[in-house]
Image (cartoon, rainbow, N blue to C red; front, top):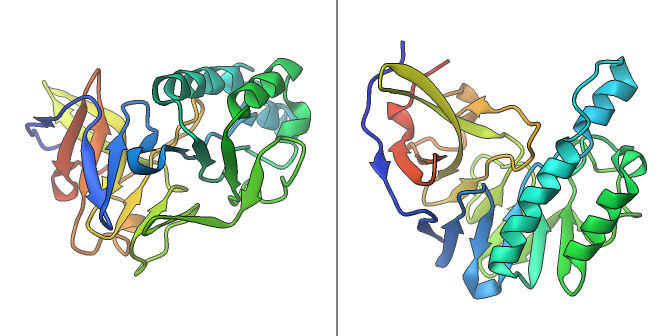
Length: 236
């Protein structure tokens, strides 16, 4: 049963500090590092719909890539980053770039123009190493932070994705699930940015080893980010 709680409303794009670096939690699910003019997004899962169709014949609306890129265009237009880091699983599989509509290829090229664009290798798209612009890496160090796809228990100063964290709360008599950033003093795990991605409840045991002393969930709400302790969230 979900526990009735009161969420603490924060500003639209609240700031947190990790390893001495100020990080802005964008309501879109992106992360902005103002001192480095760097925008980070995780788990775009581009061409997921076409992947399902190609592998299993399961039809999903073929608009996920266009919708995700539109959201990415919007947040890039607001921040005008010098560097964009896509934190792994940018494509749902290695064949994603080949299935992508030429118009979407062109949009990615336009977003990359004049910027350092880094594709971090993920578990879904590690075989993608060319044909989509930018440069590829297993991890990236920015200031005192290490950016990688999969979080590692015991690591510090880490920004990662992979797990698609969501928080579940009871509000006004109903249960609500929201994408969220999960953060403590050692690491930050980012929400999935893609429009066709599922989520893993932050109360899942998968997160226990990453946040042994608890963490704060920064839930992406309607027009605001809401902060709540992990222990207060509801389980599935």
